[in-house]
Image 1 (cartoon, rainbow, N blue to C red):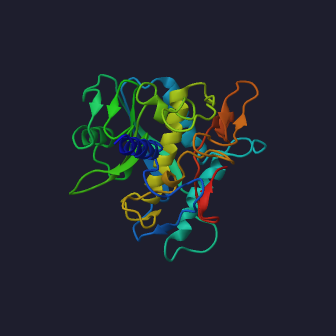
Image 2 (cartoon, rainbow, N blue to C red; image 1 turned 45 degrees about the horizontal axis):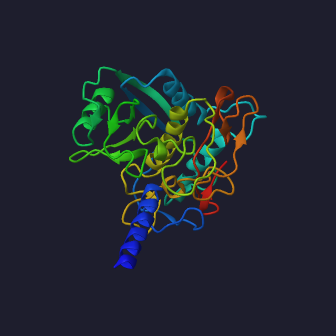
Image 3 (cartoon, rainbow, N blue to C red; image 1 turned 90 degrees about the horizontal axis):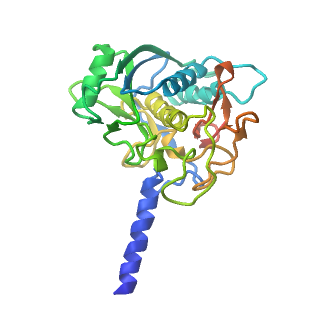
Amino acid sequence: SLSIRLLALALSVTALFTYSSGHGHTYDPYNDKARMIHHGGPMLNGTVKLAIMWYGNCGKEIKNTMRNFIKSLTVPGKAKLQPQVTCWWKVVESYQSMIPDAKPGKSPKIKVKVVKQSGERTYKYGKVLTLQGHIPELIEHVTKGDTELLPVIVAARDVTIQGICNGKCADHLLTEDPHPRPYIIVGNPETECPGECGWPFFPADMGPKGPVLKPPSGNMAADAMVVAFAGALVDAITNPMNDALYHSNKAKELGPATVCKGIFGRGAAPGNPGEVLTDPKTGGNFNAYGNNNKKFLLPAIWNPKTKSCWTV
């Protein structure tokens, strides 16, 4: 009947919106308090050494913006400029207190450092990268077998990575057995699903139509990739082997950034990133200052003190 067909259509649209919003679960980051639990596995600490593969012609804007963000995690800017990226990172460092037998007091620092970079502008592996075939080869290319490095594969505008745009715009994953290792992939939203991965700097494809922000660097793809990479980095630090810190009682592990997707400031709601700052000179929107007066929009992460999503 017509009523049954209309009901089926409504249900399918609802399911599509839930999936495209990146939640895909019953947990609501806008209203619920996440219950993150340490499941016994190791977290990354000390100095986390990144090996970045820039696959394709990524462009200097993307490279510089991502490298400046990584530097800003542990190198503060001018003290009078608040809030800072280092404040956001200190909350990530505080997750170490959740490890059994953790020493009381201030959590040790976690330093993220780019120690290797490699470029592949000839598209040696094609323009569609698969997780089982091409990604392991790229990891070997950039790490040369060094298992102490955390590989980061960053795609150019004309490159598709398997799984990107499928609910996530960057991801922390593991290579397959016999010796699985963590890595991060970052998609480029300039041409690949900008309506999902370019938001909030690009109009969203689905859901409520809230304000569209102006990228603080002036480059939509670069700033959106920082948002995606920041979330994937936090999930990799806290749950590198998929057995450490993640949301409880879920079939799929949801890390401290994944559970807070879509929130950038106070008053955030579906389609609305929340209250953020505006650069009076450029009009760019941001919520944290970095090193050398750089500005970034950072995603919300779970705060162990309040047990809820938090932004700087």
